[in-house]
Length: 491
Image (cartoon, one colour):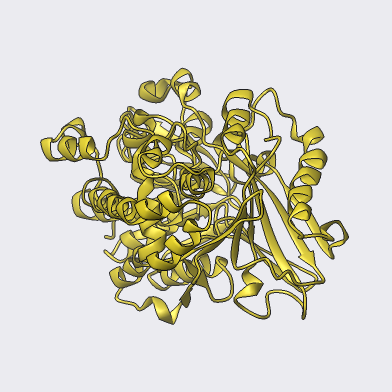
């Protein structure tokens, strides 16, 4: 008889885990409370405009390809990716433009226009970023750390010291660069894991190497095609993906998981993998007396990651300033993170990111129109910020930033929708509406995240951004694959 597993949530972690288990012969059922798989990534189609509401910057394509290879399939039969060059356009408050590129000579030429000294140090920085990525792949990204013996192994501790865990990303960047433009452009990588460059560890400098050398990719038909591809692959392996089904309780008897109660009845399984937020799963689905290591008090002690304020704009015009990915920086980058993590309010001067997938691919919007996914950082849900009253004012603030750079007329869009941290929490049950689970603003929350295996309940596992190895679409997918492969080998 086949081994059986139930997976809660059809986001990237849950789908990746389902593929890994099913490819090893397991019987897998995925239960998703939303009407479509994808977790935080959903496709929105309105009046001829197609938007990906969720992750849009795709890196590390080998992670996704490895899932298809597990199943003996070719990713290209399901999903087509294309490399973006330049990767991202960076536009600063004074009008300076830097197109981030794989071409380091081109990068140095652009940087030299505002700082010759920063340009001279760029090669050295990229060499360090490459080392950080290699160490991360070796010790953190491609292995589970299930016990204290794993976490305290001498090779891991040695390499942990080599990635300078107590040095912030901003402090590392200051060793190479001095101009605010360079510091902001490369410091922004901390936000890829929902954190502040002024507090998160230096290891996230590796993302400069990942984007420059490994590449940034678009997905033909939109990023949601990644979800559709993994769903089709999983179902071809026999996985049942059931949407519109909400898990209401994880049944635990004498410390052992028995299955899950749902809005459509009980699903029995000795192995349950939670693809939702670890903190939410424990707080909402496991009785507190069954989870002493994840008590409500301990859950409250974690600092959530930042959240996001999304505007979907379908505009009947084109903008020459926009590439596929474009970022508009404020004059003083640090103030944004003080607002978010200290004042816990929407930034007064936010960085604004725009994904215009229609730049790279026709058919995403009507002729001579633009489908703009606009993202500004926002605080996680807290008692200071009430999105019932903040949505309109922050929306205007974000659009005014774009207007100041010539991206005008957005208030006259064919489509104009806002999506707040409260919406994220309501739709996905993300803890306090945080996009990436917990922040990486400390050594502990970066390198010693909640484990993939429950310390309290036998048979309960976790995948996703809050658990190891961390946030971001490819890394969440890695967590699912690693957990699935481990369960198939050892359970």
